[in-house]
Image (tube, rainbow, N blue to C red):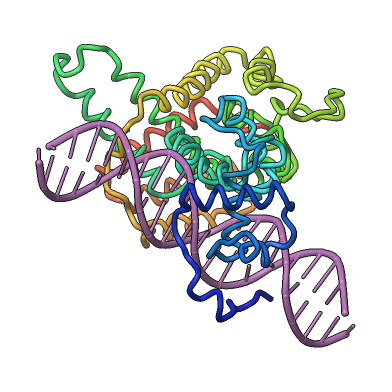
Length: 353
DNA sequence: AACCCCTACAACCGCATCAAT
DNA sequence: TATTGATGCGGTTGTAGGGGT
């Protein structure tokens, strides 16, 4: 509905508040209480509209406002709550005494959002990033690292090349799978998702050997490493700190002994991914390519995947066939590392019966 | 010193919601 | 039930200050 500004509000002062104005507002509220915001400025002798006064009071002058930088605990809580509530800043703020919705919103947009993006996590969905730009950045990193392997060892005296290559491959694959399997992933309404996704992201166990991820498209499935809150007698979803949760649940997936050898490899890859995301936060890798618009290439990928989805064959084969089809149509030079990724997958992953 | 760029944060704006009439 | 006004909420913009060139 809303309301158009009345004529006497058209020439009210805007912009930053002066100390004098702050004093007038605080003085008035301390003596008379808030009353209605609309009439308050007139009574308080302020040439401001009620909305401006309310905002100034709620976000700055209120005596119970907590000053100073947000703590790590507060930051983690915001991330947790955001994954459940979305951009409901006022609701999030009710869980952080002394913090305002505006402050939390600003902090999210200026700090947390960037952190998550650098970690390869989509701040909107709290899932691994699947946007084309991010995939292209990773593939470019991979391409560069492959190039590095053919160079003289003098260009790579640190021995980090293999790690970088492996990490890039794994994250590309992870994101590809996430992209393709988007609808069957974990329920976003589950507060457990937050900690586990950030500190214990979806693993190769889940993707390659889990019985439910690719085959059974159950949107509520959390994967073996995500406990059922009721089954585990956990009443408060936030009773565990992220690190506690992560440590408790990391690599807890049901791994059969007969596949132990394969899984050890997967585990080490998974471990690398987990640490890589932390490392990325610390050693922020700059984008390696300019941003790519969503092009027909991307549409072609989607189209191929959709075609594959229509098939009644195993999701594993159709999924990878779709990608393979795309890769074959793509030029060979740029697609070589993509194929390598698929090779890696097909050799280490045996579709679950 | 001057300029530019980036970041953080305060404040504004438009719309939604709710309660009173 | 419809209308109106007050308030709340979330997206966006403006700006001050710091750092780099």
